[in-house]
Length: 418
Ligand code: EPZ
View 1 (spheres, rainbow, N blue to C red):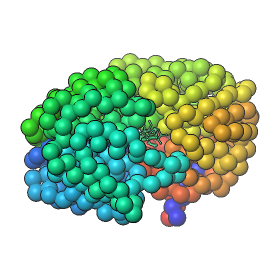
View 2: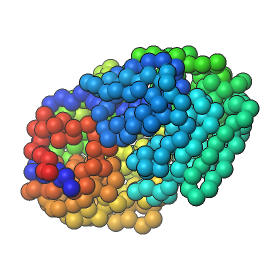
View 3: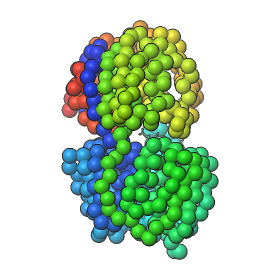
View 4: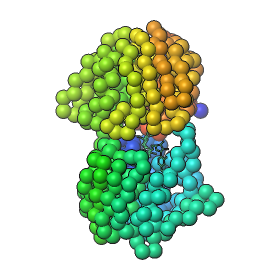
């Protein structure tokens, strides 16, 4: 098991060029299957989840190569429509291939993604929406078989909740369908806008992405293109939290400030100075940090659930008491017990966590239980007294490109042990 060994209390200082967004790269890679011919995705982060998406594309018959943060796919020979259980289990977001495979092949067979470390992850909204688009779906022994005998047909879909994955699957399935599809109560996350912009660069006709109503006019087919993956707003939030936890000063380059306003507002409330000229964020923090008003995780443009854990790690050593309410996932506080091992005073009850700031955290042996929770442990360790060992690094590697190198470059004392 790989571990990160972190000697804390080093003030972070310097500049970080923020990676491309994992949560955009994955649906974009699924979209490459729809685009006939060659597609180049630049600023594609080199992450285990992204490599898993490339393996799925290869299994479906696409050529997929990866070099210097550029993924090149060629879907010319793609004929496959089955994704094996092994690949489906590698990452939960593989479900986003369902819409793309249906859009290209007219049929798809894959296994149920099941639960994950964040609790149950149902796909009922994906299934209901695809049925409305004319897809026949049967489920047996954990396998899902989908066919659309008359092709994908446009429909008006009202999502009961603005699910990111369901919105992406509908857009992918309907891009080359017949007629017009309208999604009401669509997710408004920046990654949805990025997927629409990518598909439109490939010849699709999608309007309204980033708003609650998205209109997709089906086109005959899509072609390849070159596209740059958007910046990772959660990686940016994580490095802001690391600056806050160490009383540091960081410049984050190549970001979109508007995408993380809900997070920068919280750091400002903690007492950090945040300055956002163009595509940069400068954050300067002096200790101690202040406690903040209640943070409720919400769909975009609310406070993102993916930033809950790293912000909690920074708040663990603030002055006063703060409260968080996790509204998106049922089981997203598994980092709390580990932070408590480091001396944090955090109590949870259901969806609520109360963080009573302490003066200092102390190094300890802790384990990541999920991606963002793992990043929170690294954040806490950077500010803690003594040495912390973070186990289960494979979770962190799913979403952060070379985390130890990035943090070392701004003054952290962190190394990987094998
Ligand atoms: C995406 O997951 C992200 N993953 C998540 O990031 C992120 O936390 C989440 O959106 C919310 O912003 C990717 O983009 C790959 P949802 P997704 O469908 O699409 C329930 C990270 O750390 N739901 O908006 O799965 C669901 O259980 C990851 O980078 C249903 O009940 O999120 C959850 O409670 C983790 N039925 C809520 O909706 C459905 O059919 C939000 O899920 C679909 C979802």
